[in-house]
Amino acid sequence: MSLQYIVILPIVMAFAVSVLLCPIVIPFLKKLKFGQFVRDDGPESHLKKSGTPTMGGLIILTSIVLVSVLYMWYDKIIGPILFVTLGFGMIGFMDDYIKVVMKRSMGLRAWQKMLLQILVTTIYTYYITRYTDSFEMLIPFSKGYYLSLGQWFVPAVFFIVLGTVNGANFTDGLDGLASSVTMLIATFFAVVAVAMDSGTVPIACAVIGALLGFLVYNVYPAKVFMGDTGSLALGGFVASMAFSLKLPLFIPIVAFIYLAEVTSVIIQVAVYKTWKKRFFRMAPLHHHFELKGWPETKVVAIFSIITAILCLVGLLAI
Image (cartoon, rainbow, N blue to C red; front, side, top):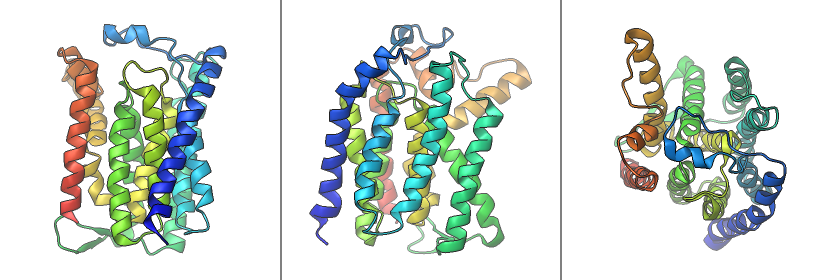
């Protein structure tokens, strides 16, 4: 099958769906008063974002699902990736709904969110251990050597999936940040999938197109935010896509920003609980740089540049 059909067409279709849905869905979200809650202890520049429509991740998810379903016949491997993406997206939707509609600022309780994430991960882990041979992980820069974890594979799946999903969630905090970073990661996966002749190409390209369309309205100053609906879904896509290509060990490279964001939160909490001091001015990491005086657009640009360079490093590491 031609590359135009499995690469270009999914990008164009997902972009069209996303960019056309935004001007329809955004006013609807405004009408329903699905506005963003902004912490008053955060950067002052973010206070003006209060009320900006959130749950825009529904636009991203709709674009990905509509296009991916059209390619389900192409390769059954698309199904599990779509399941994980949609599964985590629905968890994010419940979290956003509770925050925005029910006016409970913390959304789902931590244990509820974690329990649901474990449930989705358990179903996905059962699938890949029962119906696939994705038990090995390519070691970066090893010239083709794979790591086999044996009985430790299942715990590794849980650790990697949950870590990636929550890293993506923490990355969503500035206009266009999570969208830009994840679009570059999806491009990395699409290039690798084409080179490997993998059936995952259409869904990777659908994610690229959906995010490009969403970015039209999500770049600074954002007219809509993706919310947890979008960020958790994108984290699920990155993790499941990596396992499908046997590249989970590449996540710390290409998704380094995810890792940095979630690690900054862990460090901040640990240091504060131990010494009652803050290690960063504010966590996640992007807020630290904002409070050091970086404009929001600079933080997004630098983090995106870092991701682009590391995706190139990832290609060299295969």
